[in-house]
Image (tube, rainbow, N blue to C red; front, side, top):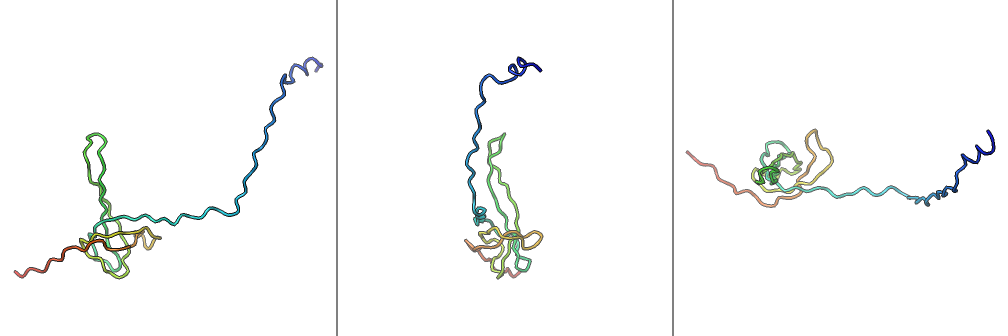
Length: 121
C-alpha cells in the first residue's frame, strides 16, 4: 500500500471522542411497594369454612354502542372469623396466595345485608 492510499483512507476530520457518563452506584435495590389493591363487592356465598365468594361489579363503556355494560368477576377471599354473610357489602384486600384460588382477604364489612326471617308455611 502506498502512502497516498493510506492518507486517502484516513479520516479528514478527527472523530469526536465519546466520553462515558459517570455511573451512579446504587447501594441497595429499591424497596418493594407495599401497596395492596382493595376492591368493594358483594358476598354471594359463605358456604365454605373461612372462605367467602365476593362478586365485584364494574361498569365499562361499550366501544361500538357507547352504552354502559356491567362486567362482574368472582373472587374467593379469606374470612378468618366467618363473620361475613351472603348479601353483605365488603372490602377485600390483596394478599399472598392462601390456596389454589384464594388471593384475597376480608378487610372489613361496609354494610350488613338485611336479615329476612324464615317463613312458616
